[in-house]
Length: 102
Image 1 (tube, rainbow, N blue to C red):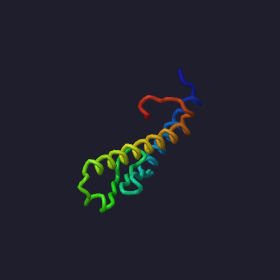
Image 2: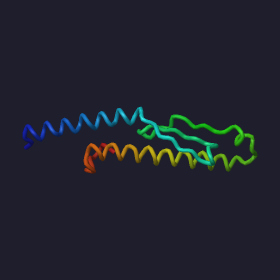
Image 3: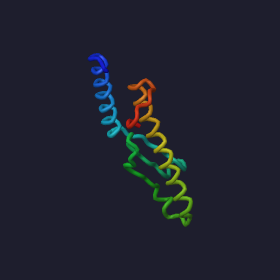
Image 4: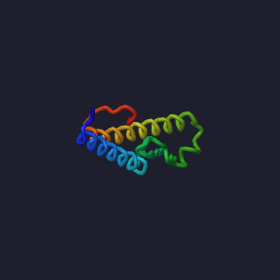
């Protein structure tokens, strides 16, 4: 059975985790590939918010190169978003894995 102190600590941890979740919604990360021809932006909750493509790449006949650049940018920004989320969560949980949080 949990004593009052443990219950209070659990509630505080829950509040900090909710705050981190809110911060991740508004924090963004960015990935640039191809020397800046494709830029992907995502939230810390791993939601893509924008993809910018240099117009000079679009006029090229090499569609597969553009697709590869977009794919690379999206994968990189998703990795950055996941890393950001893990860092923020680990700061609160002390590295402890909590089911359903991440």
